[in-house]
Image (spheres, rainbow, N blue to C red):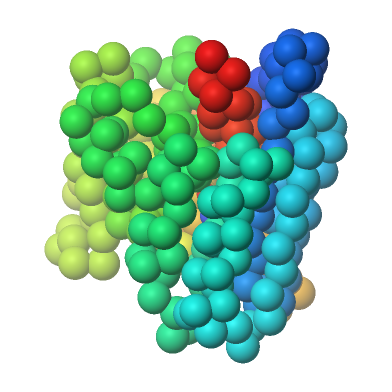
Amino acid sequence: MSAQILDGKATAAAIKSDLSARVAALKAKGVQPGLGTILVGEDPGSQKYVAGKHRDCAEIGVASIQRELPATATQEEIEAAVRELNEDPACTGYIVQLPLPKGINENRVLELIDPAKDADGLHPTNLGRLVLNEAAPLPCTPNGILRLLRQYGVEIKGAEVVVVGRGVTIGRSMPLLLTRKSENATVTQCHTGTRDLAKHLKEADIIVAAAGSPHLIKPEYVKEGAAVLDVGVSRDENGKIVGDVHPGVREVAGWVAPNPGGVGPMTRAMLLVNVVEAAERAAG
Ligand SMILES: Nc1nc2c(c(=O)[nH]1)N[C@@H](CN(C=O)c1ccc(C(=O)N[C@@H](CCC(=O)O)C(=O)O)cc1)CN2
């Protein structure tokens, strides 16, 4: 039996359609939401993601503010771009596209973002609010994963979830979201220091694969009927995406979020949710 596809494209389209109406309501009140992006360098993947974010903005009526810096930009130049967006009233929320070039202190840049304009939910204040169970913009990919699971009726409550990876955009906060009382999942986090990944995966009802290691999750590691979300992005010699999940997993799993077409579009939709919610808060 082949797994049901968790269709991120279709789910994101429905979310964007709802957001369009909310943006129109804000505009009727004289509020124009605006998403800013800071892109440093010429990484083709990052350029593509940022371009997609601005296409989404145009689709739902959010204004776009784009700042591009060369790969040679200094820490000070990047921090100056952050300060500028903090002060720009047209920018109601913004992101710094990650990763930043080698040699740049990413945490120092993230810490400079005004937490009220943090559209990624990655500022330490907002991550701290998440730990404290307070309202905060949620990190986009983890939130998108939850929305996708709910959309397809995958049971999260009581589920054994294995998160593979511990990066700042997904792995660090995914367990925080899943273990809130509203989700009530049990989470095991695996990473490069995990001794027996297969043992943990075999127990999992839900697998979130965010390691960036091509085809790391093999069919024989997956419990029959599990939900498997492929979030890892590697590229082959032609620039084509290779996910963390082996294609054969579809024959074992109950649900699969493919890559591309699964979690990626949801990440972008959740960014728009954060931007619109921040503008709604600011409008009272
Ligand atoms: N500041 C941030 N940087 C990064 C984040 C993030 O959430 N905030 N996450 C990733 C990249 N990312 C968002 O920026 C992202 C990844 C994937 C997609 C997407 O739509 N992917 C498509 C495929 C696109 C392609 O063909 O390359 C899909 O999965 O269908 C959007 C955004 C790291 N950096």
